[in-house]
Image (cartoon, rainbow, N blue to C red; front, side):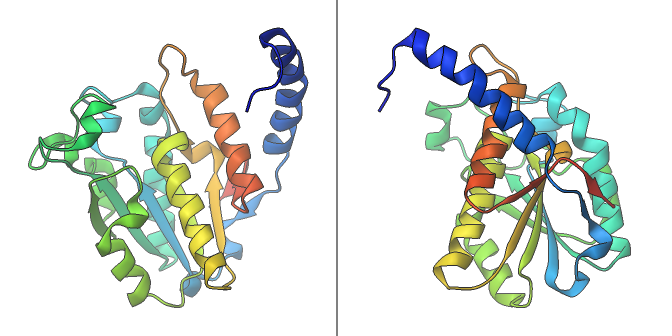
Length: 224
């Protein structure tokens, strides 16, 4: 519930946002080289043409992280770290289109992983028909097939939607099973879009903080 008036809430929020900003930006650095390659996986979320390059939901903010995500995939391949690419893929009947413009239809270029990501190769491609890739049976099957993996580096878009839902569900699932896990989101490799009432910098910040308060490791400096 919202108990404060608009004026009170805005006054409180300024102080709270300053503290959230400090918390997120001062998070401890994490190095890919320090992670156990046999127990680590890179999960790339929606670095596909329909969000990076073209279509109703493409965004320059997503394009801005695109090259670095591809570089991270290359680094993971070099270290023999497993990788999964989750890719939005819908039919015309998708209920999502009541909330978002039509995007990433099956068989279109929008639903394809970008050439830059694809050229790095050596990843498992899993299509998803919702904002939460964890719910896909193919992803559940991948987890079962890779039982040693308990550390996940999650990168891509959008921070407040698909990235956040995946990261939180991954963490919650391991917690449910009383299994230790690390879910890591490099802040520089996750982005969302700008729109009226949806300032990307603010939404990113609040989303990162929400993930942190739920056990996800958000790092402002991820070395690879």
